[in-house]
Image (cartoon, one colour):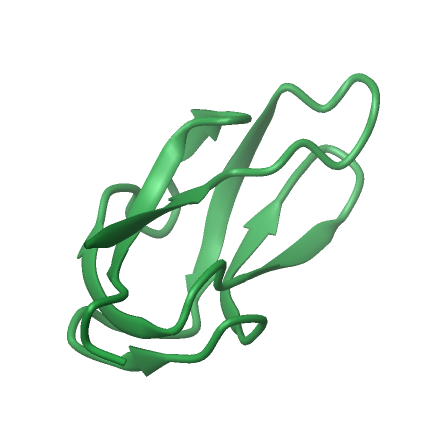
Length: 81
């Protein structure tokens, strides 16, 4: 089964975020709660934590790309615990 990594909304007025740096690559093992990507908003750079333990199987937003909050930016295969 896979778990979606969603671009969170950190506050009022934050409608989009830009990937500044992926901390993990496709194929890397991730643990729930571990920082996986840095997102830049109009106010700050925030780390997004992995919502599940497993293997990062897809990255949907490359470094430098921007997406609206609540959109899927990656996928974790949580069957590979």
